[in-house]
Image: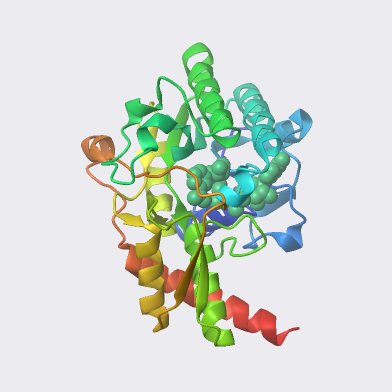
Length: 328
Ligand code: NAD
């Protein structure tokens, strides 16, 4: 059988679900979507897609997932925001089994392109101590001092992807995503990231009339946030390109967490009293994407303004909260 299937691993999750939607819009087919979660827990579910519930930590499951595959996007990982990754380091590191077994199965199946979703968490922590950081360049991953747990797994899996390409000719591509946000993502339950958490807290304050918000850390830590549409574009561009080194896919619009709250408050049309929880997980002090390399290689970088993406995300989370309140 010739290989012609596009496989999205982690298709029941946030980025994977949007990627399947985008591939369908483009008429790509056949598509297979794989996730460990029970099917009714997938964030987005599509007809006309081969949807498989499999645990990709298991090698036999990876063999099944890679059967007839030509293009593979590995977006499957046990992950979440700072609150999750700081308290679940072993779980995060076990995702090494997913990428390792997928690479082995992809090699055996003769896959043409294999995309791996790495993260800005691979960057050396010493370069992220200052909130006024200018931006992390790709070479800043070494000497290695990544985020403990989650970041080490990502860095190791990046290298595994590199060596499968160098030693076995499997065409791997690696993106270092910087915070991705948008509708149809995690917004509560403990795995959510800052943009969704802030939207949820502001909406809760608006709906309850209790005009206060808890902020993790002192609010001065800086980040950049990439809207999902930019992530999808960059991911597919990289996967089908000849560029083989890990590359940043992230926004370079740096904001402090306080500024993030300002924007969401403006969308909601209210101002809240801020309570800073200084002992909460807050991650590094400063992180931003340096986009010189992606500009050089692709003449493009993620550019959807934070305010534009947050308006869409806020509206979606608002609907979720109102409809879940009604169903209670
Ligand atoms: P997500 O948690 O929404 O999606 C990941 C999916 O992988 C989940 O649906 C989960 O059930 C699935 N999964 C976990 N273990 C599995 C297993 N053993 N077998 C099969 N499926 C399994 O996360 P996301 O935001 O969509 O992230 C996708 C990828 O991008 C991950 O690798 C993540 O580390 C990476 N990444 C995301 C961000 C971000 O800001 N969202 C930033 C950097 C990197």
